[in-house]
Image (cartoon, rainbow, N blue to C red; front, side, top):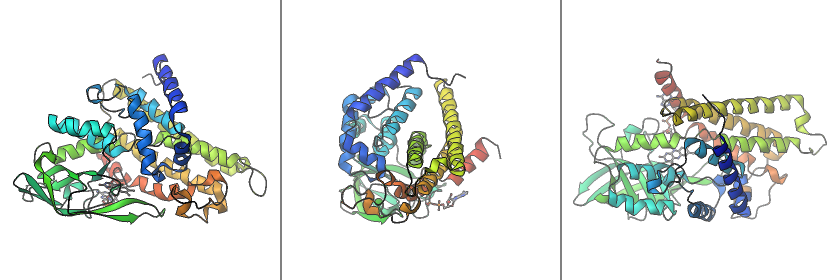
Length: 400
Ligand SMILES: Cc1cc2nc3c(=O)[nH]c(=O)nc-3n(C[C@H](O)[C@H](O)[C@H](O)COP(=O)(O)OP(=O)(O)OC[C@H]3O[C@@H](n4cnc5c(N)ncnc54)[C@H](O)[C@@H]3O)c2cc1C
């Protein structure tokens, strides 16, 4: 199996690199470097418009719907170069999640209505899957939708809805048949306009002190039936398809490589009392170990991509990438905090918020380190918790 890039792919990397050098606005890059979760909505809109104009907004879409026609290696290179250049991520809820569901299961009218708006980021989507009691065991969703003429009337409560306060649309799982024989049956995939009366969004402040998470209350929300994707009661098929896409790339290798560079930069700087942390053999060993782990993960990822290019579906190996990728990310964040030493203590959420003028405490490069550490504790929970991925590996790979 050949894991190296060919001449065409190397040329592609140069093309992407040159584009990013020229086009990423420096103010957005500076903010994204702190942590792209903290960017204001307008930064995403500006950046996604630049990608849209270049035809690169939807790397995973087929050409017929507006994708660039890249192979897996090109998509990997693109992701890696974007992370390396401190670009904001492409907001996944539209392009990576609901878009592919719509072009795979939607009607021609739904494709025409929603896909161009996703590409142009004219709509901002959020994911209304999780509920209290329906997280890992998603098939337990209890939000109900009853048919009333040419509408569904939706009642229920979604939780952990990232970015719902910014979104104007939510894709969601609702129970249309409470009497179905199995929990996976009788679920439907519905698109809800967030401006519909009866939709209430309430913030959840996460332990980094920031607001991305929400609860969404749905009270007698009337949703036109043309917002149902696929067949009524067959939403589980769309739900699973979407989760498969959500988990692609969740290992965050590009992001971790960027953080490793940051770690080396911080540890290489002159400390307050003189000397450099990187000269400490114990810390140096930790950096070397994590770099080795990350390289091994990257090779595993390349091996999986090479198999996919040869026509083999990703399968349960992607669970290995998710588990190890998030562990490495979290370990790197711990090391960054260690490198920051006492500057980690006076962390205040205001330092990373672009809408305040609170000055950073400590050296500029340390801003965002503590907030990212706190935020990314959740990386082993979202996208399927690591325990669930271990179950998948046990069944599908180890045959237990
Ligand atoms: C930062 C963040 C952002 C999120 N964004 C969204 C979003 O935008 N939209 C959305 O719909 N959801 C979102 N979620 C929700 C996320 O998908 C769920 O948190 C996740 O699926 C776990 O579900 P739960 O929180 O209900 O935990 P539970 O399912 O109750 O799990 C609790 C614990 O038990 C373990 N566990 C559960 N079942 C098993 C099992 N069978 N075997 C072994 N261990 C098990 C889990 O691993 C976990 O440690 C987000 C979550 C976080 C933290």
